[in-house]
Image (cartoon, rainbow, N blue to C red):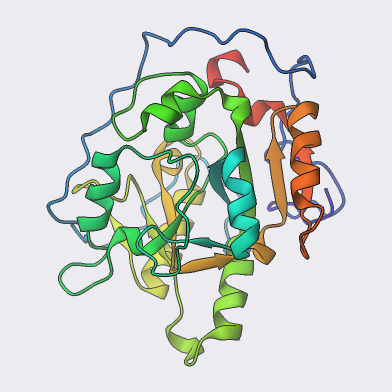
Length: 288
């Protein structure tokens, strides 16, 4: 890839970011696998309140290089049919943004989940709603995405998401540093720019938030420091308002056919991120 690995292996293919992929066919499967009966039952979304708890770093069982938080990759999942609309606006918009002219063609969230995120607040009374932020995962194996690619039932997902196959989606990748740099460059007061980090689904009452610059940084370091925990698979990074498409450094796709479909969509765009075929991001974990 034409960017530095988050673990500092500039110019090399990092085994942590990109583990060896199992051989897969380059064509789209003709038949979808039936929905698995092993669905993970997530905590039900709630529209009540978000509990903001003190953030403690603790002692990680397994350490990795977590000092360069800016190189943490962030992942935004969308359906390929939504990509032309994103390019037309030149940005990813938060759900409750007033800038929407046309809503996404394929809505991944269930109506109940979307309403819960509109009512859940990031930092208590008078703070912005979760839906006022563009959501990113901190891992390409995030649990919500895993339930889509394993075709497991999840009340947070829409019928369209449940009916789609994994290769119908694309993963838009950026980094924490790019988001922060863009905020500093465009903010009237760069000292107050920040994003929020969670250790679980942002609509759940039990989820902890890092909702200030300092607490978000501490929680992000905690999530990155413990590889024995699945917390990073549940976590979200929430960017207020919108994210310019120019911050996207990579579009991950399932196979050659999807890559060939994405490239013409990008043809007229001023910013053309690399389109990479990476099958492990699109197969259920148990198949890897």
